[in-house]
Image (cartoon, rainbow, N blue to C red; front, side, top):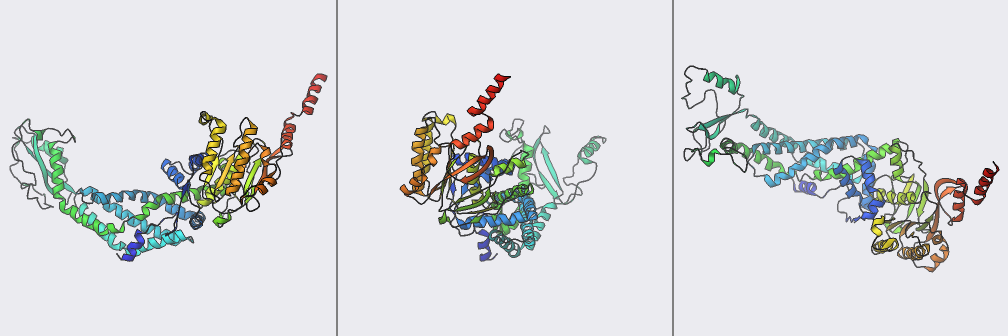
Length: 577
C-alpha cells in the first residue's frame, strides 16, 4: 500500500467537522438540556436506547464554528434529498457495527484458536463488502456536500488501491483450508478401571464419516460373538491430514508419565473450569495439531490488517445521527409541516432573521396524533433589538415561543433543518436557560435566592455570542423584590451584549425601555415583545409593542364573563327569575 494511501485512510475523517478544522465545542448545561426538552426530541428520533444516548451527546455539544455548521448542514441536505442513499447506509449500519469487533484483533493477534481466526477472516471479508457497497452507493447518487464527497474519495481510494481482489482471493484460500476439515478422529486411552486416562486427535480428515453412526457401530461390536477387541493399532479408511507433533505418540495422543490412579487429580473434574481429563486433553491436542493452519491464517490476517484502521467504523454514530434526523424531518414534511435549511451568517453579527418560526415540539405532537395549533412568527435579533422583554397572559405562548427559539438555534447549529419558512442566523457559543426550578431545589435558599444564584452562575460564563432564555424568572410572591433584581439583570444582559428572550409577568420590567437603552452601556438594544390574545381569542402571535398589562386582563375577563358589569348583570337576571 502506498504511503499516500495510508495517510488518506488513517486521517481523522469525520462527518461532523471538516478535516483540519479547529472545532471547539461547548456543552449545554443540565438545566438547558431539561428546559429545551432534549430527551423528548431524542425519544422521537429512535426507540434504541444506545442511539438516543449517542444522538443526545452529539446534539448537546455545540459548536459556533461557521465552517463546521455549514459542513454539517450540507451533509444533512444531501442525505435528506436522497432517501435511497439513507436506505443504503441504513443497511450498512449493522455490518459496520459488527466490524467493531475487528479492533480486538490488535489485542489477540497471537491467539492460536483456529475458530477465532476464521471469524476474523470473515470480519475482514465483511469489511471489504462494506467498502464496496458504500462506494457503489455514493457513486450512484447526486451529492454535493464536502463531507460526503470526501467520504466517496476515501472509500474509492481504499477500494481501488488496497488490492481488494487479492484480499478476497487470499481470504477465500485461507477459509478453504479450514473448510477442508470435515471430521476429526479421536483416540482415548483407558486405565485399568476403564476410565479415560488421556485422549488426543488421531487425525483431521478431509471427508465426512458415514455409516450408521457411533452408537450403531458400538452396538454391532458388543453383539458379536465373543466381543473380540480390535488389536490393530491403525484405523482403516482414515487418512492423516496433519503432521503429528513430536510430543505425541503415534496417533497424536499426548504421552502420560504414569498410569493414572483412582485418586489421581487428572481423573477428576477441574473445579476452576469444570473440565475433565478427556476434554482437557482434546483441547491441548487440537491446539497443537492446527498450529500450522493457524499460522497460515495469521499470515493472511497480518498481511491485510494494515488496511483496517477501519476508520469507517467510527462513523456509525455520525451516520445514525444524520439518518434518524433526516427520516424524522421527512415524516414531518409529509405531514404538511414546513421546515427549511438554515443559512449561516457571520458569528460577529449576532443576528437572526426567521420567518414563521415555531416550536418543533408542537409538530412532533401533531405527528403523534395530538390536535395542536401551530402558529408561526417572524422574529429577529439585530441592531434594532437583541434583548426582548416578553409579556402576555398565562397560556398565551410565552414559554412555547421562548423554547422554540432555543430549539431552532440548536437544530441549526447541528446542521438539521429548522422549523421555519426561512432561518438566517449567526451561531451562538452556547444556550443558557433559566426556567422555574423544582420546589424541592429551593428549600435551602428560597425561590428568590435559588433563582438569583443560578442567574449569577450564567453571567460568570455567558459572552456576547451567547443565547439566554429566561422563562418567568424572579417571579416571586413579592413582586417588588423580583422586579428590583430583574431590572439589574436586564442591564447586565445589555452590558454583555447577549441575545435574550426574557418572558415575564412583570409588565413593569418592559416599561421605560428608552431610558434603559440610553442610560446603560452595551450593544444589545432592549425591546418589548408581546404575545397572547387578540380580541379575547388566543392568537399565539408575537409582536413588538408596549406591554399590554391591564388590557390583556380585560380581554380575558370579558371572555370568561368575570368583569364586574357581567357578574352584576348575571346576578340581576337570577334575582328577576
